[in-house]
Length: 343
Image (tube, rainbow, N blue to C red; front, side, top):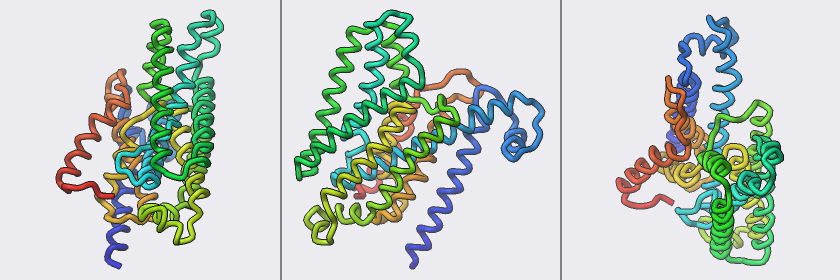
């Protein structure tokens, strides 16, 4: 009973932290907007500059919601992979699904070097990037599902997923070698990751895909808890191993693949947040861990985006760099202090 009270308090504090970081994120940026005007705009009041309202509602708030969705989905997909493979180093990218999305983007951006300039310019835009990245992640997901139906050992599936990642990285390297400087620079910029390019319509599409992934994850709570104790134990509890693996893989594919397609490959969040969450919630029950990593992932991604956008400056740092620079030392410190990996 005392643990339940502690968990409730921790959830309340996390939600308050999420609201605070959300407010901080939309208050800061290249254009200085008084906090009172930001609050007035959100709650339908009048503000002194109408252009600020456009900045807040068409750029900052969609960007903040995108950061929450990206951080939450990567954190949840990381938790799913760490549980399925019982490996603390597993993350949302181990199945090669995000690598498939990156390959799709690379084929569009750098493969366009083979086309005429006008045709290539017409092909490369935000919508086409999302489409080809989604197709790439979906095709890799289909292959992973096919492999999962042929192998019984989850570690074999893990190794095969890593091999898919190596193959796609090799193909991207070859494309980079033959690509011109302009297209190579565009691909590198895309690989930095960004949460500031989505419209409200794109944000809605991303939300629906992530929601499906979250629902599948919640439906898999019993299987996830059982997998922690081994596949034999899970089977003895009546868990259908094959069906459960399929659902978990599909959920991970939807969560990680959609994020990579819409926001680019963003590292660290999926690997670290599950471990950071376990430092607060000393439990292995996914009924608690799933909502916790969703909130924690959103907080961390919002904070990293706030730092990356360099308040009062027109420059925006690569979000990938910020997530690793800020997050990795925190994880190292926590693990050294605990002296063991909580898993």
